[in-house]
Image (cartoon, rainbow, N blue to C red):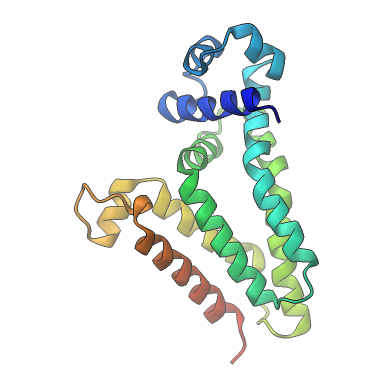
Length: 205
């Protein structure tokens, strides 16, 4: 991906996070990215295709992590899940605005084509995680759990923590000016909690 194309995508994330997908125009994006409209159209063709490229770009890193972990024979399944939790939390904390945009599109249910794009691009990552859990169950090191709902529980924790600073601070009993996403201690706390959750739920005594 060219630097200019990546720059436009990054500016699109900022704009969509501020005004929403529907409330943002290609002309506004071009102005924000300090490029002309023709360049945006050249790289992406439409706002929908730009959105698709944005999701693909952000999903690619974790896709690579998951592919490497799936093939790794030196780690146990629970160690692989530990690595996944670390990667996801670090990535989501760094890309909070993108995470909110994705969640908003999935929840609003206004543009089926965008929802289909999100699900198509992200579902292989979810399938890779499920395959690791299922492998642990098959080996007998994990309990026989409902792996899709376990994953929903983990991702639900991400959403609860990341989508609203106000709600997060309320749950944590913090002052309104506290920014949990900029606190490395809180990030470690979340990583440790999710690791403990998976170990308690999955590992046999």
